[in-house]
Amino acid sequence: MIIIAEFIPFSDDDKLRASSVDLVAFLQSRGEQLRRLGHDYKLIYTDSGGVHDSIMVRGNHWYDHKNQVGGGPIKFMREFYGMTYQDAMISLLSGYTGSRASAEKTQIKLALKKEPERKPFVLPEANDNMRRAYAYLTKQRFIAPEVISFFAHKGTIYEDKAHHNVVFVGTDENGIPKQAHARSTLSFGSTFRITIEGSDTKYSFAHFGWNDKLYVFEAPIDMLSYITMHPQDWQDSSYIAMNGVYENAVLNALETHPQLDSIVLCTDNDEGGIEAVERISDILAENGFTNIFRECSQYKDWNEDLKAMNGIEPLPAVPHRRLELYEMTVGEAQFRPHDIYKTAGILNTAMRGGDYRYVAEIALSASAQLSKVFAKPNDSEKMFGILQRKAVSEYKAYTDKGKLISRLDDLRNAVREVSAELRKKTACTTDEMRELAKKLYVVADRAFRCRTEQLMQETPAEELTETEEEQAWMKISM
Image 1: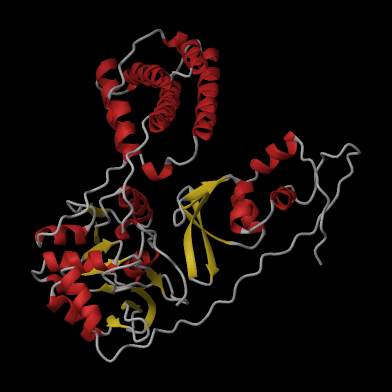
Image 2: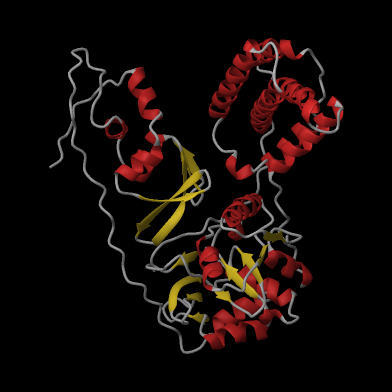
C-alpha cells in the first residue's frame, strides 16, 4: 500500500543532506547492480530495450552517457525512478525529515520500482530478397557489393519483410543471433534506427578474423564503409559496431576472443566520438588492455569519407569545443612567479573577483616553484611549461560535465584545502612540498575548467543543421 504524504516544507539542512547522499551505497542498499570501474561504478539495469550500462556513478554524482544527462541524488531519483521531488527527498532522507516545527518524524512508504518484463529476442522476419537493402547500401552509402555479399551470406545482413529495413545482426560465440539493429532504407522523408526489443547488448554486428587487431566503430554503416575503403586482407582482422558509444559489446568481444590485443578506436570525428575514445580508452586500460590506438575519419564519420570519395559533398568533422577551449586556456596561461607564502592570499583575492584564469596561473606557478625542488628541470618557468602540457594531456572532456556552479564548488573546496596547508606551513619536508605541489596543480586544473565553462557561455557554439547522421540512437520496439 502506498500512503500519499502531505506536503513537507523541507529545510535547507534536509536539502543539503539529500544532495550529499552517497549514491553508490544508496543504490546498493536498494539492490541495484553496480560494477566497479576504477574510481567509478557502472549501474547495470534492464528495461524493455534490453540490458543497459550507460550510467556511471561516483560519490553523490552520476552521468548517463546514453541520454547525456547527469546530476546529483535528487535528480537521479526523479529521472531513474520517476519519483516526484517530495518522494525523492523522503527516500534519500530514509523516510524522515526534521523540517516540521514540532520536530515530529514522519515515515512515508514509497512504491518500489517495478522492473519491466523483458520480452524474448526475436529477429524480424526476413524478406525473400534484399533488393531495397542492397540498393540502399550500394547507391546511397557506396558500400562495396562484395562486402555486403560477405555478411549477407553469413546471415548478419538482411532485409526485413514488414518494413524493408536493413537489419544488422549480432551473434554469440556459437553464431546464434542475440542482437539486431535495423534502419530504414528510405531515401526521402523521416528515417530511423532501432535496436530490436530483447537484444542482448553484450553482442553486436561484427566480424572476427585471426589476427590480433580489433577495429571499433559506432555504427554498422561506418564499419562497412571502412572495410570498403580498406579492402586489402580485411577478413584477417576483427571489426565491431557498438550501435552508439557504449563499450559493453567490445569488452565481451575481447573476453571471448583472446587473440585480440591491439584495439583501434574508429569512432566519429565529432564531440560524441572524441569523448567515446577517451572514455573507452580508460575502461580498456582498467581491464588490462594497453595497445589502444585512434584512427580518425577526415570528415564526420567513415561513411562521409566514402561519400567524398564518390563525389558527394560530405558532412564536415565537428570539433570538440570544450576540449579546444580548455587546451587554449591552459596554453595561454602565463607563468607568474611569487612568494609562496603569499599564494593563499592571492588565490582567495582572485577567487572573490571571479578571475579563474588568474587563479589557475597562480596555482600552477606555485606548483612549478615547489616542484623544481624535487624534480627536474631545476627551473620554475620550464617546470610551469611541463605542468601545462601535463594538464592538457590528462584532461578528459567526458569527465568534465555539469554546470559552472558545481565546478565552482569543486574549485572552492580545493582552494580552501590548499590555503589551509599553506597557512600552517613554515617549513616543509620534500614529501610535504610534493603533496602541496600536487594540491596546487589540482587547484589549477579546476580553475582552468571554470574558465573554460565561462568561455563556453560567453561564446555560444555555431548552430548546426541537424541531419540524419546527428540524430540520437533510438531504442524502441518494432
